[in-house]
Length: 248
Image (cartoon, rainbow, N blue to C red):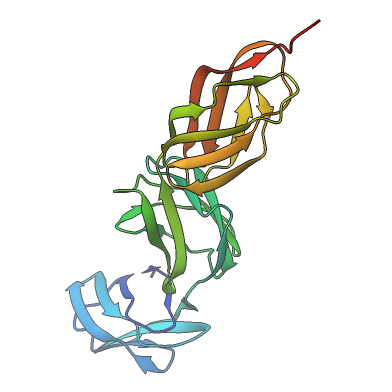
């Protein structure tokens, strides 16, 4: 006589289906010593009931006018606890995989990012991975994990739009580097990298539309300038020119 599901929240409220024989006229379903609520005789072979609050493993029995059944194991699961996200931001389009750490995650069935949800992959009781769904718009949303033990939230994830570059000033400087350059564009707040011709440049974020950087040394000629954030990379092709110094 199977029971499905065979686990649920310690707070109770899990609707279970018990399948067997001679179940007509069921008068009670017990989870250990506690009676279930909402007992419904679906058919002679099936009964549904709502679990009471409990803890650990208990035996579930069905009582009919003919007697009481053998017990079936039911496991009470505590609500999950989340301790952190491996990555707390990403593109508004979603599609990136993150790892959520915590406890009680082995029965995770859903992870919600704001109003959108995804099905996770359970790695262990302390870790699950999930592909982030697309977000409705850039900005921060709450993250909640649903398991057999309930739903837990309290973490946040930030959707970010990919950056754009609209202007670079000045557009040239010496091959020795050291030129202070102002890059303007959009979605620059979370800038993580700036390069000139593939070489990393030190930078500072001024605001959402402005980043300043100092050119690294480079060879004579025009080079691409790139600016990256967790959502993507913007490239301004040939935007900065390394100029040769004068010779006498």
